[in-house]
Image (cartoon, rainbow, N blue to C red; front, side, top):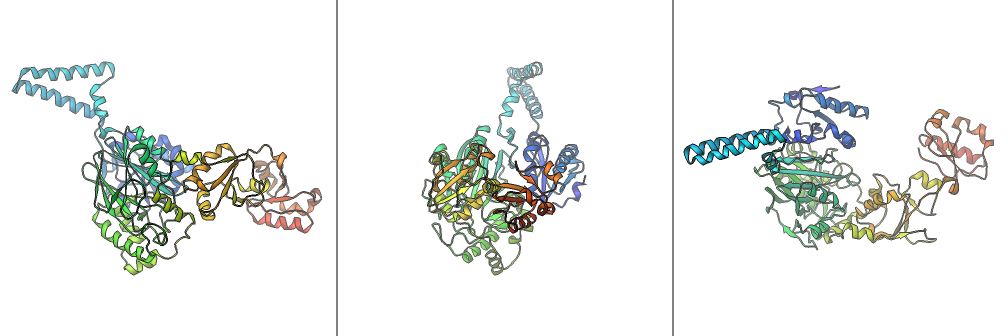
Length: 603
């Protein structure tokens, strides 16, 4: 197991992620600045997140728990994690500041009780001897607490905002004094949204279509959602800001250049918004769009904690500048927007606290940029040093770099901007409008989308002319790339259990209005509907150990020609191998000998 001493760490490494594996309670008390809390006890919840980080240093108090964390990760193939030798206790004088939270609750009780006893004694001497009753009352309370295990003072102190601990361990958080910021990741869209909570009030930033996760977290913290911050009309997903406003009366804040068609408060940049004891300052940040607003949040010590940058600045990149040439309240050429991006990033970022965290709306995998890091957040200082688009260069060089080699623009992007400018209907209301159908039509003048796996699509076809977009993490991105906002679609879903997820994906880009029918195909039996026979070309041992298709026949490629007499020329065969090369060869052999082999299964 690799280990490293605190003073040997290069904290300026842009690919470095520090993970604190202790409990949320311990993390709340003190942690290395910028660290992410992934408790060892919740390893199963976090294990998939480890793949998004290039270089990880894990730590605990002494190094023992982090060693266990690393061993568990290694069993899953994650070998890029280094243990912090000596743990947090070895970090005195560490180049990266150790942030301190409130004192442990027991210590707070001791200090408070002792202070009240001394106060009672002092006042009884200096003012009135009746004040000795305060000392007696506190003393009696401590005796009662020791005898019963119940402490009224402890309950009062625990209810104070500074002692409220973030316990939602499935997403990433940032904290300040009386401030918790939670990040929510929609991995299918590489979209990040946020909730900031301070003193019983909460604000949501760039929300997804379904706001239930924000409601759940607010309820967990006994907080009221009072505001929604939109950085701009997003092009790649449908936002739930209007539903949150309608259901919670939260104020929606958005840039005045958006031309929003829903109830909102317009911002020009420079305005201040209070949420609990936290302060949010708006910044006009054009570049990705001409109407972008970013939000700086400060805790009640006036410390700059985080910057919600939307699609303006990403980790490792900035937002592309070519999405608003034809859509939006204000249209702008990409070269013009790229110039705005150069000016705004150079004017705003250098004046902010280098230790604050950049919290973007997207990560690696989005079509809103071309060079994003796998990290989901980073310090401003690191980004100023290592983000290629924030380095010293001429404005002309910057514009050339930003406007070249960007990914193609999916057709649904233009539609999403318009939807978000208008405001989307509530999630459940929109979902209820999706019509269910019991059978597929004989003819359809739209597009039928089969979401089953490719092998099921090929082996058991349901509709001639359907296109196959298998449901996985790429589904919604591909759907928005090949289906136009003007198309009519029928969607085939394999099982009832997949219905909710597939509908949620379609609704995440506002495409539910395209659906004229959703057909759930509960397959009864393969034998009943089977039209093909699979020839599994893998070795007999592999075929036996890992059978992939029921009723498949096993004939290795090297034996195929010698066993052709076993095959039936009235049956259509589909060759399958671990890759696709052998199956291509096998299909041509079959056809050359008069057998039907109409499809080739990819490995």
